[in-house]
Amino acid sequence: MFSQDAFRRVQATLRTVEQKYNLRVLYACESGSRAWGFASQDSDYDVRFIYVHRQDWYLSVQERRDVFELPLTRDLDVSGWELRKALRLLQKSNPPLLEWLRSPVVYRRDPAFVPDFKTLAEQFYSPRRCFLHYLHMGYGNYRDYLQGREQVSLKKYLYVFRPLLACRWIEQGLGPVPMLFQQLVDHVLDTRWELHVREELAALVTSKRSGDELALAPANPVLSQFIETELKRLDALAPPRETAGNAEELDLFFRRYCVAA
Image (cartoon, rainbow, N blue to C red):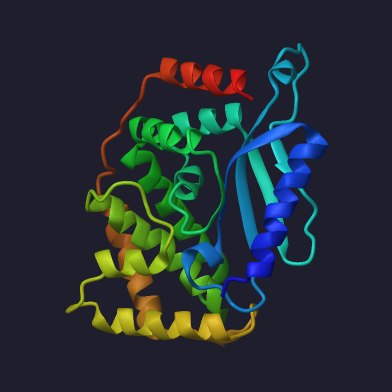
């Protein structure tokens, strides 16, 4: 489900962005269904990246845009966060940012920046904030796309299950949540008591990969029952512990890579 032609187009797009806007891409990865492992044939390539401007860009009294977004072209969805914004989000243990660091598809990887950034991310990882983020996402996706519906989009079931399994991952103390959906299934769904759920999910992933992006199907009673029960169970749990890193480390990190830009 991954095109070498698309990989080359992403690489070319990143080079064009760097040259045209005078910035440096430090890290770029795939985020979304292709990184989660259940893309269909017409899924977009969701490219996300962290970038830094030249030092003079930061020496201004004007507020400047810290998000970069390209218009959607063909099947490429490309956007990025400026380094200072990324560090501010890292301080809040932003789950999407933490997931980027675990993407199975990496388009660009600065050899010095990435290991340093991952080490910094470990200091600011908050199980509590991530747990509440995924629980809220699970509730919202279930309410908006599945609850009370006889016909549902196949991908919406997966978009509810992924945050719920992420909550279990955090509940079990396994650290930051991985990108790959199957990794979540293998580690947090019991092979004995939840075998039917695993089987239904496997069939759904297979159907999603081979079907149309907007394909509809009848509501699945096995998966729906699991979702309703799990939402109640997770909501009754005491949220995990909070953590807080040293904000001065963020400043030092930013200065180091801003100067090097």
